[in-house]
Image 1 (cartoon, rainbow over the protein chains, first blue to last red):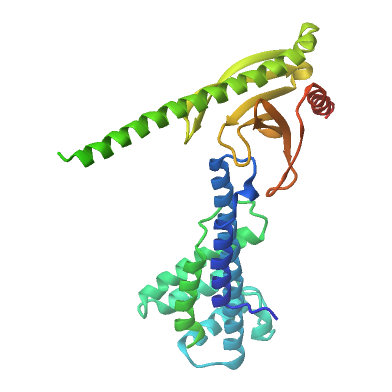
Image 2 (image 1 turned 180 degrees about the vertical axis):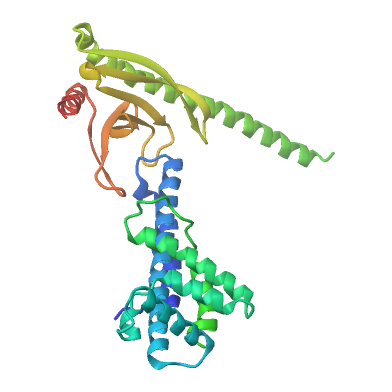
Length: 176
Length: 154
């Protein structure tokens, strides 16, 4: 099966980008040099969006899995406790108290997860609180991209920035 | 001042002057080619204009190309009955794979390109896909009329 990791995606991104940059003029027959450059820039921009999106889908899956594992295993660390509090609050609000936590909270909004993490890291790690806010913003792009690009275009992160945010998230949350 | 340095500077100056002359010659030749193609289209359509089926409006447009600077070139605006408008506008002399391009468009929709092959020879060209080869066919009175009929019937 094709490898699908943060590192492989970033390597693929570099390769595809280089491929487009190296495309010969035969692919741009009858265009002016300016039109060729614009078309190439459009392509590169689309590739940037694609890879930022792919990385964010991976990050979303990791965050959701970690969230549910934290609920299921009743881990004792601070983040897991914060997650359980969030789920408790969510079950109350959505009147799902009778349901199992992992079932009731399986579709927890990522925004709520990031807000909870920001609350938790308040006074503990303000730099990481900022990272959580940044990643939360990245997901506006992810949702815009996945749902037909109908609303105004949000800020599109560079895949390298998504990767950098993931590394910090891995260190502080996923690998805790 | 050394003689060698002066020779280099003199040579550079001559090259620059020659390049400016060449640029001007290429620009004039291109504008002349555009004028010829506009004239050809005008002549083909004149009998129909005389019958009030359309109006041929000559325009001058401004083009900027890195190799030629800014210049003015002739263009046409063909206004048909029911206000269907077709513009015939030069795009540039420096085109990848050709020696110039004129676009035929309706509003912002490019319908077909005219590609200059050199020696006053033009071809219709259309994109089959976003990249790669284009489909080309001769540009003459018959093919132009065919294209116009297609445009007007749409």
